[in-house]
Length: 186
Length: 232
Image (tube, rainbow over all chains, first blue to last red; front, side):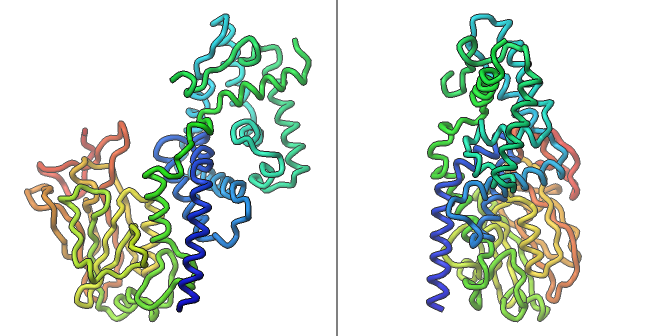
């Protein structure tokens, strides 16, 4: 019994440590893809799942947790038929820009939003993992359950498709236009 | 037109800046009250395998051999009386916690989604977090061999955590709290199943309404058992 209690305590400590380090990143990952109460439910589901399968958690658990979250989001979308990620993305890409020419910023923002929205979901997720989650390619590959080589191919193709879609448009960024994050606006 | 490489870099930079939830906005979120509540709920509620299972304790979400759980014993022997009370995260006046000493749930004193309490051989069940994902609540009941399907609806604040509707046969209501249902009766804060209950039914619990969401049930008035759409 004592051994069992010690084992349970170790497991609990393991989860507590994992949770402390991963809650913020997982919350961010989910909130970047779904909004409102759904995000809370999914974050909850991710960690409940992690708790149930804690023995499978790798040393670096984030890609594993993101993968759980990705599946949970997929289930949520299929179940509710909501498309809050579109709303989230629209909100994101509609963030105020600091630019010399308001017309350029509108055009550039819309071009980028439209191009990103028209990408296949898989392409979008590849780009989000790199640009938003800031993952290395090997970790991003783990999230998507593919090899690093396969991820490199996916990333290359996603980049190429996005670039072709925004070709010729004034992209918000660089020296001409700089989006202002919500924190910078405070 | 810039070179392809420059354009791609510029595009990715723009995308990165468009991150709707920058990482810096999440600093400290792991120690927020919400995070700690979730962590405690998980640690106190979900299964962690058989190692923590001991007689008299229950590992929610995992169907255990009936003979090894008091809940199973109670159900199998036909002596179970289940009461569901709503307590945590609801107004204090609607959240009595009867017979705390008799509660049987995992140790650690952590918050539970559902608490099962034995009362003179019967089984009292408390849903302590009506805002929990429905799937988890249903899984817990299923794990106990209780074919009770939980549904939650948005309600006015006074009804959060109360039982709005039940079609579980032969149940006795457990009244409490200060809020009043239709006809002036006190709100249900739980219910009691007859001994040997093997039936099935549906249970609708009031949850906190989300911003802008229409209440499906409100306090007072001639409130029907099955609530109609009402304005907040």
